[in-house]
Amino acid sequence: MTDIAIVDYGMGNLRSVHKALEHVAPNTSVVVTNDPAVVNQAKRVVVPGQGAMPNCMHELKMYGLQDAVIQSAKTKPFLGICIGLQMLFEESEEGHVKGLNILPGKVVHFPAEAMITPEGQKLKVPHMGWNQVYQTIDHPLWEGIAKDARFYFVHSYYVDTPDENSIAAQSQYPFSFTCAVAKDNIFAVQFHPEKSHTAGLTLLRNFSNWTPET
Amino acid sequence: MSLAKRIIPCLDVTDGRVVKGVNFVELRDAGDPVEIARRYNDQGADELTFLDITASSDNRDLILHIIEDVSSQVFIPLTVGGGVRQVEDVRRLLNAGADKVSINTSAVLNPQLVADASGHYGAQCIVVAIDAKRVDSPDDNPRWEVFTHGGRKPTGLEVISWAKKMQELGAGEILLTSMDRDGTKNGFDIPLTRAVSDAVDIPVIASGGVGNLDHLVAGILKGHADAVLAASIFHYGEYTIQQAKQRMAEHGIEVRL
Image (cartoon, rainbow over all chains, first blue to last red; front, side):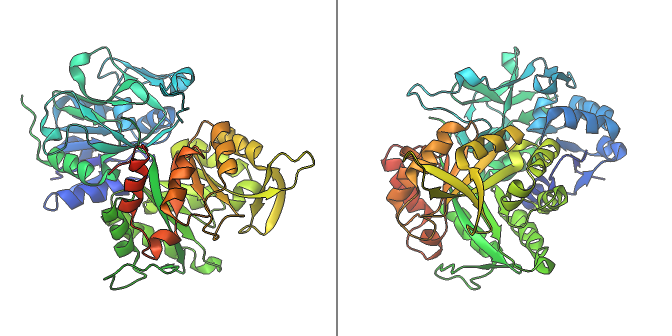
């Protein structure tokens, strides 16, 4: 039986996520799969994603994986990464596409008029590079990670949620935005743990050991 | 506290081997890409860029193995450039483990490639590399022209408008190299870097001419670059990346230490 299924719906490189999980959890079976049955049977599910959210939603449906992803997000340890975080929400400004509607909130673009520092420096979009992740809650997935550790980001859209209880971390660019959410068995991040060296690998290891409270 | 400015060592690859004098002490095999990547990672590199300078197209696929090996063991972002001509090249590099693909000559010959690759895989993984040379201008205002083929072939394209066009077509980042400064160790072309970085909304990586750590500082503070790329000062062991970051931090630049 598969311990960790990485959902492959044809959007970009899943190799790094796969290798990083194998690296931190050498005795577990980690598979990259586009088979809904494998996702349904796995103990844990990771949904990565890069590129444009409309393409991701389209491909997820084309592969027949949408129900398996929704079911996983409701029932077992679930890690969303980048678009895998964004798709959990109601909708995205990007192409005005509907998300999976598992968590309340919208995915919005960094507003051009706000992208300036208090010192008057222009900030670039995509938000690309290592930024500090300020943890706002205690969570098993944060264990062993500094409360302001830097993770690698690359994105132009972020999640805006009214459910403050689900926020697990925020970053600043130049304003505070939600970069991680946690609810029941779901943990999802805007940054890329698979590209974030020690802090990222620690988070992935924590996920591989995580048993959500029921 | 906010986003850190990035330091990116650049590694030249040919026929599946890292070349160009990497000189780490205690390195058993100077050409082993995984070991080199790991060293830079341990020193605190924020990303790694691999540039494929393989002359023969027969051996170009060999870089895929390098990227596969490195991405299985070194978990920081990897950019790969050199010889990218079609969307299929982008796909294969991403599948091998590259996070970003850099397009240079082909962006000039076929700008639609940038749009197609970005449309399919997202702007976040498409870097457009621009080789710029200062050219005389009738009114004495600085003017830079885009060159291809390693700085040998003029294109007639003006750099700043070209960078803006690349952003519009879907580039997520610009890798800007001054061909006048490349290899000189006299520092970045600051007016060029600043003009391009201020003109576009996407991140700009400054490249070409780094000879000491203060050049890196100037690239950020005076050139307004979002990241700095260097090869020789790191390869030949003159400075470590950690030293570079400390110098930048002393000048108030936010870095990931």
